[in-house]
Image 1 (cartoon, rainbow, N blue to C red):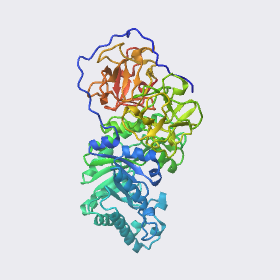
Image 2 (image 1 turned 180 degrees about the horizontal axis):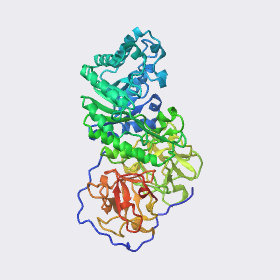
Image 3 (image 1 turned 120 degrees about the vertical axis):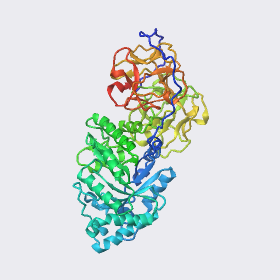
Image 4 (image 1 turned 90 degrees about the vertical axis):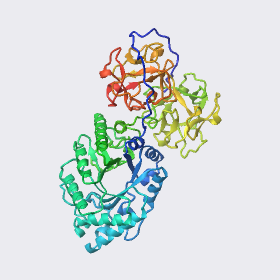
Length: 618
């Protein structure tokens, strides 16, 4: 861990390959939305997720949810076993806490669920309901629906009124509600909900109903058609969308269209897409290619929703893999089912969804050093983050950059910042003004960090940023945690490094002293200034005083160039822990034309797929 980094670079001769110039370049690209919440809203949809009581106590999960989700569904806190555990004894507290938290973050809430029986999770319908004389079931159900809907009147976007009424063969589940009322229990529940709140949207929700013409999806369609014909208040159908990679139906869009043809909205309500994993803790895929399949299927699902006018949005059934139900429920080793990994970091499926919604990846993801030890240089001070001699609890400081091991850090793929055998650490419960310290690496949440495209080094657990005390810039200035803002005192750049293609072993290269419009290429690495890039505090990748750039409206196949730095979104990049380099404006990845690996291969933008030609290291 003592490898040092030097910024001394030998001068080089001109590039061996003469490069053409753009004669003119269009104005800078406008910034695309950089979160799923923003990107979906820009398309008139929502993207959401769930929240549980446990996750509500996890600041990493709540921070991610507030940033990426526009709609929240309580996982269990509004279900019957929680909300009415005994007859007439209503417990609204758990649901209220989630609803109030979401409202405080500007998010809408889907109520889930009023009437539900699933033989695989018997406990979520209280025993007292199942043991009622059948002639008393209707009254108990109507009272339960009425009381919950009245309690949340005016506070929710929608209710899943009846959840999972069908068996996979399209027959009705033999619930106590069906035994007491036949299929009419569904209409009775919907009418009770409408009487209690005239404005909330009322849904039926089920799984394995996503594709066209399966027995279960046909049963849902026929039920919805009959309810509409009978004048029963029904506003939408929820397609849960619990999948296994490689099995997502190709007819989801046509099924959405036939349902909306009944005058209904549709929503993807519980999306996850599981794969086999090596073990359940880290959820490492057995087949890494499954992540790409998951990304493609996620993109296709978003696209289907966008192509159907009354598809209102999409939610995943988790905040991330760390709190998803799949590893606990399915026998064997299954997991990695969501858009965020066990450390709440975006996966290829996240970028696929973001791109499909028309967004571009940005500050939410942050950057890593792509496997190299780097200095972290203060934008205001020009001095380096430095660890004085000492053990656990040693406070960091600013010091002149020397390239010593005390100033060499690895931004690890697990979110930790490592140097000298220790990890950068935010004390548990940290508040503004607490010391920024090093500690033995533990993998705990308070040792996870994000270097954002605004240049902030942000603690994932506390939400606070590394800040030199009092705005001082001199040697020995102590580092503390402080409320984050975009300013030079809190902004950090990487020391300069070459970017080497994993597939080619060659360096990203531009003409020596090249002018605006000079194109990027691969070339044999030779430690020259025209191959030495700095990820600066503003998210730009700089080389020879210019920024890596592309013309406005960049699409897959657009050549990359260098241009005077202007701070625009087409000059901002994210270096992901997966080794890809993603542009903020376009959401596309740094690639080479046709995946070429030889000298002179053009550097281009291309749809992110995680293949070898899109992997880079420093």
